Image (cartoon, rainbow, N blue to C red; front, side):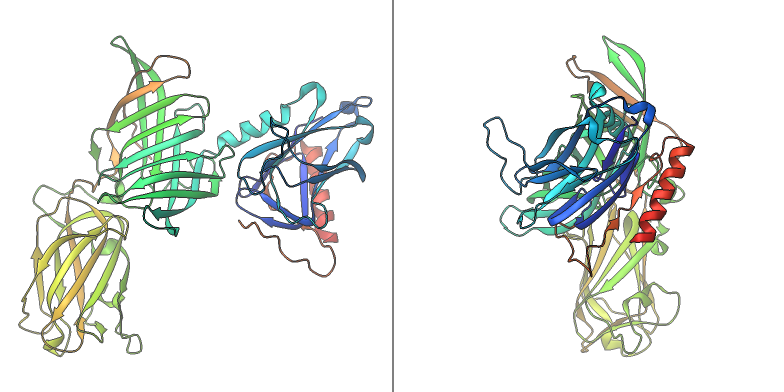
Length: 532
């Protein structure tokens, strides 16, 4: 019997020798939530020559939490009712827990038929809780675990993770949305991290521990200004390397391990870690699910392609064209005098009906701005800015004042003035905070430009690292490397007119093992689509 599995912990779901349909279920990023009287149907194939007489099959249903009961049917015959999972103390796990548990059942061989078979996992009618299923596997009893091994091997190739995150300050009870976390850490052994921590070049530090099913994490974060808070995330996407890594800082190293002064080649290390806070990483520490541990500190940097040509010491380059967006505290939208006009090389303008205002700029990549230019607009000199601060931020939450001006005056219309200051730290966000104008009731500008130098954090590709690596059960060794060039919802939907099933969107790359299987599965898919 071919391995049969359905992995709902990723988007899209991963299937092998299976077609899945469902009813009264919510599709979350890490699981299917089965509501009262809902079900998951798994259509799989058993070859006649591979079945054997009365061959027993082992079903493993992996769920988040264990207290919600489930019924199991095979080819229309009830195999088990009200199945939960009892812990070591004989008590069911509490409802709502995120602990991943396996519910294992033996399916009588006489219920299997050569050809197509239908397995159903049902939530009893009237059940208040949600049955959250992350995976299903089916194995012949004589080779229990085969499908689980195949599932794990498939999952190991999807080593790029993206999480939607939230953070909560230590003095608050409210979780607030935070930037997306994207990471990929691989020594070539496809070992999935269990714990991960990192430090940015701005001094901010984060540490997380991932759930066993990788559906989420919990951790803590200390920002560059020392503010502490909790940090958590839910898996949103997962895909094979190198998909989705083209536009983010990816470090590739040729590595060596050292014992007693003898350094030996240890393969390639890849590190991709982007927490959306702007500052590149300078230290990464992790343990994987096999018990291995490593820590690396990046010791140097070279400019990336995104940073443009290298800037000679003391020279500045115009980075205004790298501004991805600008937002204003207010703007005269009806007159077309909006914030984005300040990025245009024209005599348009931005106007706000107030004597104080903010302009927030977001760059595509961090840059160490050390000079900026302001150009006055066409009329009303009393609308010109007179007092302001220029501030920088990595995350849009914590701002550092870089330059302060008071009593500045412009002598004519469309005059451009340069304002230079000392700064070697790269920020992704810049804010022009205007606190006073030349006496009017409004503020206006025609253009804002930014110029940057090389910067302490303007480069994001590490050249070297030093650290340690410790294989599980062994003494740690020295570890060093040099750069390799180159590149859900838990709420089921309401039923429609009649109990219509939905076909699960899935990655069918390896669903069929051969051409005959592919033809059979395509036929099954067509049948579902025709009858749904």
